[in-house]
Length: 521
Image 1 (cartoon, one colour):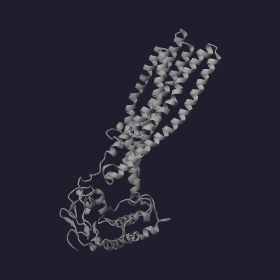
Image 2 (cartoon, helix red, strand yellow; image 1 turned 90 degrees about the vertical axis):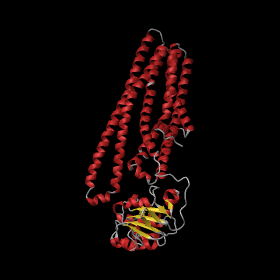
Image 3 (spheres, rainbow, N blue to C red; image 1 turned 90 degrees about the horizontal axis):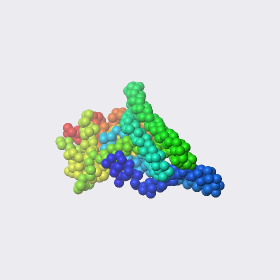
Image 4 (cartoon, rainbow, N blue to C red; image 1 turned 45 degrees about the vertical axis):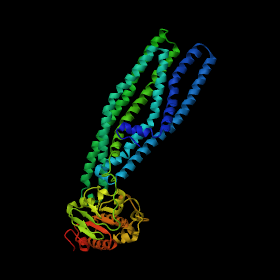
């Protein structure tokens, strides 16, 4: 269970789902960086006890320690590479599964509550940013451990230089921190504009055929270019802030290194410290740039991951339109009548409603989208029905419902007693499958089909569902009159004895209806 009370809580709850991996990443990060921190101390000791003292045995012993440190670092590096990649995969897979499962649970709520671009970005770039932060945690642990060891060592050799290092390096890091605030803010702006461009691109692609037919392709291209330019400007601003961060990573710790080197040289000349200790000090002060740079990288990654986690958290905090009722009431078996205020669709009949512009809203209300309201099915309020039973017994079909890529017959088949060929015949869609290339494979969203062909396949899929109540929202708006007449009659015949509600202004549907709002035709 993830904690969505804040972006930081969300990141931590994802991290601790794999405590063993988290521990392995920390240990391997320490094994990777600690030898580099200890190496200047070993070299300094080798200079004092081996070279200056003229002891070959001592020099060889310290050389052996250097080799041992090299093997330790190689093993730590290999282990860290595996652990860091595993952490990245863990962060990406866990975040993606959370987003995917929650979007599936939201169902139709998703499109009403959040833009397409938000979902695409949360399931794409945001997941990548979270995974990148997970990857850097091992190196951050190694940086912290090596910094602590180096700090103890320099304090032991020279309290004065040790204090300079321990005070100067944190101050240098603190000097970088204020740059994170504008960077994070610019990242948020860039991310919002990226989502807007993604949403617009998805809308344009979905309606490209219509745009071309209306001559609006050039206009939407200009609008897309304008939004893309705004996104590019925001991206440049974010990168500019990032460049200041990277410059500060080198400049501020470098100033501390220069100060330590200058002061250490004076202490060596005065005899306060040995030549070997001076070399150790210089090596450690130069090395400390690495953990500071790593810590800054981690802070930068954490700032970006917070923005991404906040967006993911917003999506995860969305709730379906209505929760399951505490005491569900089952629907009566067989055909169901629908009643909404003064409107009634008798059980087992074809009812055609001329709802005009409000047809889609009325169709959703009659089918219980969202669950609630005063609509009755078989005398039972839809708000009192278990959502799974409601969606199985009452099926809503809009004329723009999407098709998924893959075999067309498998897309139509719903595993009910209604045969696929029977549904295709009723929807006058057999020729659509015959016209598809290869083994009747659909491309994504059925974009290669015309509007009428898509509507007929969507209708065939709905008929295959064999629902007790089928609510159709203008199902043949893009179909020619001759085909529409055949479809209306065949749907009436196929759905005989089951409740069918069609919201349309077409007289061809009204001609075959059992009832209309104005009475029986």
